[in-house]
Length: 455
Image (cartoon, rainbow, N blue to C red; front, side, top):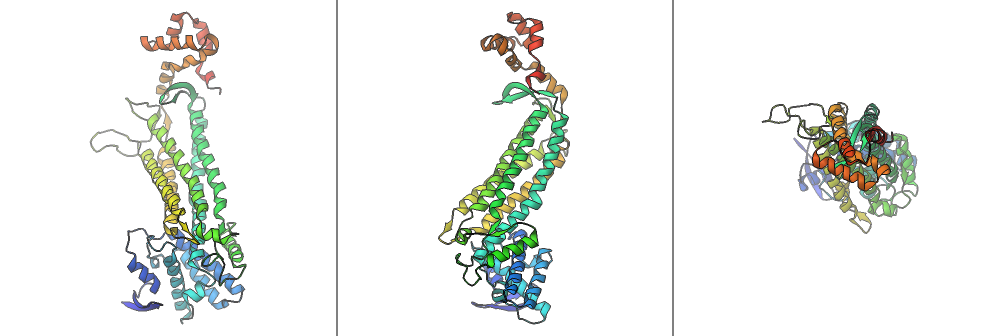
């Protein structure tokens, strides 16, 4: 069953069970591109914005209190996820996001009029009052991005840090051999190595938190080209204050709306910090899977949890699947960063028209990282254990312990000892005594792996 909806281009039929109007329907038909829907985070951010705008317009006497109340009530329904099925549009649409703005306007107007029992609320004149897609979509982008970071990614980073801290403390005195250039190096403790991973996550969390300040200023109030046409001079400030009350986040009105409409360097900047996190997650996951390689022909210093059979043909195989999953996510985030970087450069004159693809990739990065970090923590990090026998054997066999002799006999003599031990496949101690450069007592005194860690 269908009903007829009308816009400035004329009439168009719409599924009677759906709440959108003519402009949404035209977009749905005209942009049948892919399966990527406009993220629900954006729809909910729009609802927060429309709610705040209705309150401000009412306070300024432009919108009746009755209309403002019914509009805000519908916005609350959207925020609660009660109307998700009525937002069908894909990401691949107009670059300003106009059709998604109108989708929200039309759904709010339709439900509001149904609740009132008469058609008195117009999607443009009432719901979109004092606004343009050009300032509302970038505002929704910032709201959605900030909220996703606060509620999804940052809590997962805190949880991951807690696990790494516990592992660091557990293994702080377990000496192992270090590796540089993929070759043996001087010893450190496993706890010290893990502390590097811990610091990576802690620092990246700080980078993200610091960068997030860049997306607190909002474009709202700039309307079409940044001049604020059809909005009061302080409309943006008032809406930002209302949004701060609604969300608890310290949003402000951007001082320069021309910048806010045409540049997405703030969100590009924040995603740069997210990409930095992805780079370090790639390093940590790679370290773990290489250190856990084996169990008999690899390094084998770490033991990863056996979550599932690793092979369809090789019985008993356990693979570092969580490491593989999170490194694939890291690669995807790096690709998203490239897309965002290119799209953010396309601010022609007064408007950037790559907004949907920017926020789609941003939110995908946050979602994938949050989910993969949680999975990695639960199914890998928490059950990660040291293979202490292997670690001890590798320390004892390492030739790089000879570095401790440098201050006593010099670099060149120490190098001769290492070369002799390697050539004769002997222990470092046996080679050192054989050269006559040190006595057994001196070797035992000077070559102490735990002392070499400076713990």
